[in-house]
Length: 127
Image (cartoon, rainbow, N blue to C red; front, side, top):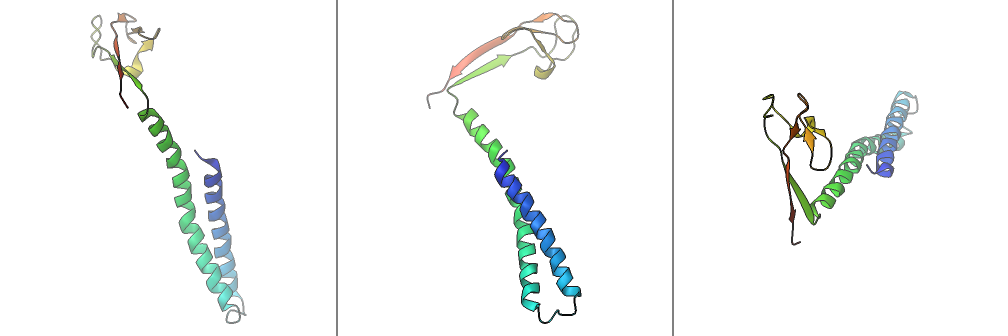
């Protein structure tokens, strides 16, 4: 995540909240008519900051993931791993995340600890 835009977004929200508080202080004062321009300015600033702050925070959060996906998409080499759907020994369903990995191409069944046959292939792209 990009920290600087995220922090700026949080500060925008906090300043917007303070601006709303100041707006209500002017609204409740006896000199409301004399400070009408300040009242309007405080309201506009509060609305803009509170509206744009969360958008900036979301952009900072999403842009970091977008750059990592672009980096993955530009990889020249991919590896495809094939695992059996069920263990031949115990018959339980196997998922990629539940495997106990011993080495690069070696895994065990998480239920019965039997070594599984893992097939891997590497593919190369031309881009």
